[in-house]
Image (cartoon, rainbow, N blue to C red; front, side):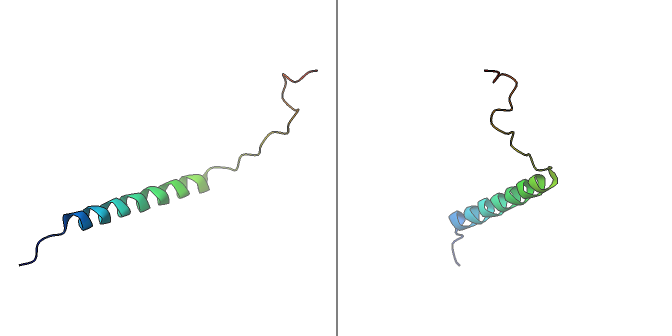
Length: 48
């Protein structure tokens, strides 16, 4: 009888978990409206 390869199974679980997290993060980023960076010099404290 063949011995179970626990390290392979663990690696597969880790890859599946990472893939799921990446998909969740991508979905979250896609639903968030894009943030436009403020123009330099348009901050209220730059009154020189």
